[in-house]
Image (tube, rainbow, N blue to C red; front, side, top):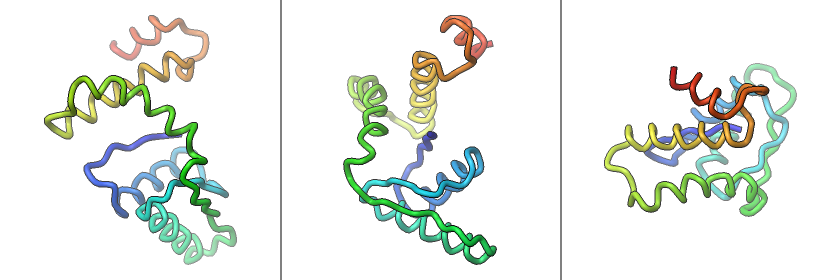
Length: 127
């Protein structure tokens, strides 16, 4: 699972995110997305590229609005922190704050450096 903050939710942003996620995690057989047209176009483009390079398997896409509910629930921590701030003044500050919130949640969930205490993980990140 990954996230990418972009100024727009459009086809180039979705394609860039999908390429980054594929590079980091490998090619998925099936992707569940919401009803976003940008994601649909990005997966269709990637399937075309795979076919052009001779890959016999394409990415299966499932478009159901509420199947991603577990993923969407993960955003509630960000929303809880951002709502009192009434948004951000710049894209750079939004990217920094959201990345920090994501790292804190990863530490809390134990997704970073197994075996280290939360404080030790935080200290390593800061150093």
